[in-house]
Image (tube, rainbow, N blue to C red):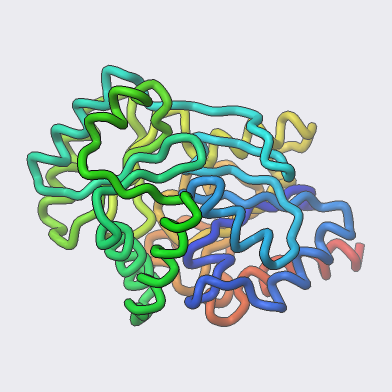
Amino acid sequence: MIRLIAIDMDGTLLSPDHTISEMNKKTIREAQAQGIEVVIATGRSYLEAYEPVHEEGLDLSYICINGAEVRDNTGNLITGTHLLDEDIHKVMAILESYEIDCQLFIDKTVYAKSIQVQVDTFIQLAEAANLTPNVEDIRKEIESRVELGIVQIVDSFDPVLKDHQSEIYKILGTSFNRDNLDVARAALNNIPSLAISSSGAGNLEITNVNAQKGIALTALARARNIPMEQVMAIGDNYNDLSMMERVGRSVAMGNAPEAIQEACDHITETNSNNGVSVAIQKVLQAQMSR
């Protein structure tokens, strides 16, 4: 029996146009009506995750920033796990040395040096899902986030680090140079207090080693008195693996890389074809027939 479902966003719950399909919404509500808790598990900041979910009228809890934050359905912070102060400058120096752009995730805000850095991030996420990105639509979405204050553009990270160094949840590094990313990943992996993952081939998601989706989901399930064998996770990329490895039922999207599909118990449809709905419906039908 499944009592808790964790769902990734980009490449999973969200369609290629970054909306939630009617089928996905309907099935999530059906699961909730049967007493199953549904939680978002994403690399996005809380506001980046909340806006598209709230706009569709869904009432969910959130594991954000790859597990660095857990928030309830009203947005209240339950747990927060920041990067260690001594690791911040090490990470920034490594990324800078390999000309990798970065973004800082602090509380509900993402700091970047240009809108283009954010645009490049979402182009890479689309390409990771084997989609052709609509650059104009992506740029409009990012500009809207800047207007809302979800993303702040800064000339330098120095003042941000001075004021908020102890509050950084995640550093996201992005580049179209895969060789530089690979070398930087190897260097970052030598720092034992870090967790290095990715939500696409063009990025590095850097958090505290204790800030991973799987760790956060395990803690949430424990707080609900739900054993992990009664938890399902649905995702499409490497930053989902930590929860795939811990749950009783792991589901890879049809658009996920082969390595992710091989690591999971089940493979569903793509995010273009209501893959989340299909995966949840199979569980609901099985449990109703008992």
